[in-house]
Length: 370
Length: 181
Image (cartoon, rainbow over all chains, first blue to last red; front, side, top):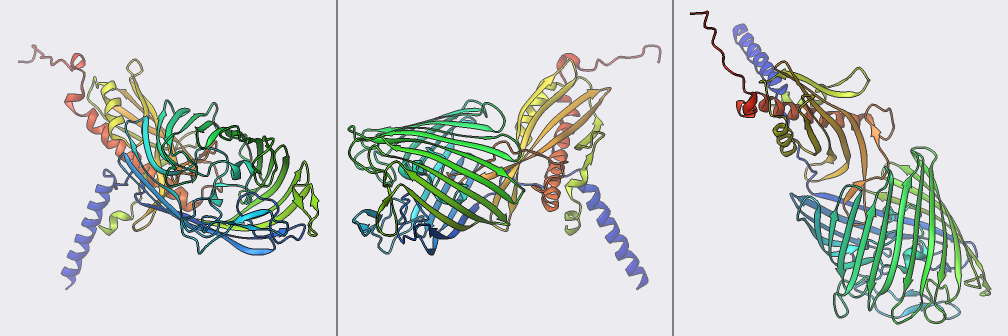
């Protein structure tokens, strides 16, 4: 028995030594990429309108329900890149990703009117899901990539997903610009500091299908002149959808301080007016968990007659200041936010229905990202 | 092979005289190695190597690269960031010296297109005690760095000891001592 034990011990020691010796010269294989990726987010919020109005008078996208604990959306995405081929599929469920985003397959038509007969929101049915991204891509060479499908727009600073924005409420420029474009685009990376994208997209924004044809041209020049600074010069132009020029840039000035800028001008087709504006996004990290940021935006409806943009009438403009904190706790981000908008004329309303130049709101949102 | 898993690749990473994490290895080499061919060979076979060149005068090959680091579950994974590095291989007296160092972590975030890209301007050297990189993450990244180093050494060792890697003009000329007979 003792001999057997000694033999077993010797064999184990030999095996262990062998494995250890092997380990010093062999690599445990690690795949170069993570394979299938699942990502997404969930968000909810409480909003208080300073005028006590139930229906929001600041008519930018999302966080629309005042004096209520409301939900944003659950966003679920999958992505996989195998060698040179990539696919991304991302669906969202909930008001932010459904009725409040534009292509809502179950949209029943019509609008909700406030006490004074102003349009404030689309009539929502039971709502369907909403596709955020659904596309495939392929690296034709090390520098040239082609992508086709329905994609988040390349224009602008802010996005639909609350994970991609610092502020929870959104800007006028975002609300009135494109959300998504379906089409085919080629991106050529000259270096890691300069790339050029050119693509052809459906004739109307934010639709899975074209109205008539694929005729909107889109282009983007990306430059990164110094480490931490990236700028995108964008154009999206079509006979049916109009023309938007956009500059989006951000610069991580120091470990703690980041400055972003978005400026755009839009001309609606057939001399139908348009808008222009600019927003500045300074952000300062107080600690690793807490960052404070301001969005200061100026937005003008360029038209003399015609469309309102987020309730801003032709010829009017608005200045909007949003002070936001991002407080991170694991995968969760708490976003307290105070927003004050000041219109040139009586864009907003008091509780008694009288017009006023000012509107304000407080939002506390919670966003979980995974 | 449960024992094998106990030996982390990060053990191959050491702190050098400048207090920087480094993979350091010295090995034997044939004389007259074709350095340009070694640079090409490494670019083709070493993960994430983006820029590598040979300097024949200095008898060295140097470059930089980056490997993806990610969380991995049973079926799925997600990018956390990129680990950039510099690589240098010197040759002298039938030896080579491989140094991989300057490991820097660049965090990734999800962008609007549902893919993951670098956060602009946020770069953390692995040696920096920063709460952006926790102990568990640091251990994982050092493991990946060690893995990279072992793989690079395997490639350099194989190349430097293969007769086909020697430049034809620099092949050692066989001499015969005619006094010994």
